[in-house]
Length: 507
Image 1 (tube, rainbow, N blue to C red):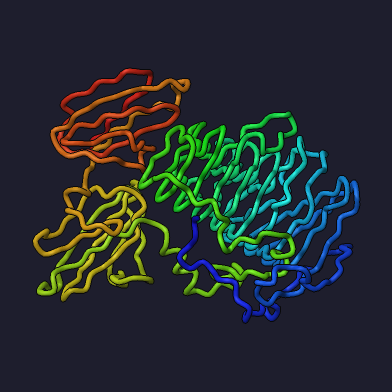
Image 2 (cartoon, rainbow, N blue to C red; image 1 turned 120 degrees about the vertical axis):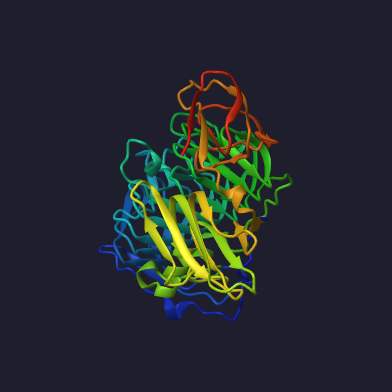
């Protein structure tokens, strides 16, 4: 089972009541009740409000900028009862919310919980139960991020048995839309949701430490059109999407699917079922553990009471400390560490990146210093220069390709993405892209050779695990997406079978 290393244990000693705040809802008939009848193995639970939605009616809950909505049980057990939670702005928090009852309201085909930052910034949703599902042919998605323009973290969420989408988080990735927000899904339990259990569509979005399970297509309710196609994870519309440390099992459809110019990476995942489309596989094995993560609520009451404490900081985005904010910023990007020999004193380095670079100022050593310079060259590249010595080095977070590095290799140790590398292996400035985006879903197979060195380049396009790079020879296939490589030397041979376009750039 996928669990974060810091996955929380259920503790009988912790009380969450002292940090609860309640969003007052105008006109809401909310009755405060105790968390009676929940698991006897639970932690000390907080009281929660029950919002009971009458039959054949819809309750709209609005959570605005900086507001906190938490410790709520939303009861939709009455026939035709429906709830719609709408978040607006940034800095909001939705925490400890359980939806009790099957959603059988047939009016409308949009989301039930809209978890989005509409004006940039950050927001948090955690400890949410939507596991009672939806009726057959009910068209409401469980969760959507329509109009997301910021970074939304959704953790410890249980979504099961929804007829027309579980997590529909790719509206912002639609090429027609101008919003390009990021959705980060952590510690989710997604089971038997139709169309997709989790769909992502903007660069930087990910799902991690989660379980995705479709028992069979017969176990899934049909959507409003009578369709059943329950996929696991769907990468759609854009590249740079990731699934990390997830357990995925899907019967009868795609376990992982990438399409419509979408592409992504599976890393350290256990998968049972088909992987289709431009999906890069890194350390992907079988035999997934489908046990729900410990951090996920298994009932509406458990979620509303805050019976399980968060596996990560539960500080609301509006009150995040500067140190925490800096750590979150530093967590983005691939680490590049430059460490000189202990005998070296005040030795210089310089490197250039086609993309962006940030100094790493918190977390593991080494760290960058104030005197280290990051210069924007005005052409999409940045140049970094600095001095280190006496065994102390510098570190940066790199988003893009390293195209040049000037340092004395006999003095410096270079680590990239936690692996020691030779600078010459990093600085491949030439690009080759095989573009099958407009090939009508026809496969194009290719082989090319170079006189120097080549490597995969996910910043230029998705690269499949089946593509090979060996002794200057690269072979692979592409459809409905791009494969990208960086290389040195010259292209000495090339063959292409299919309608893809090929682009070579010499920096």
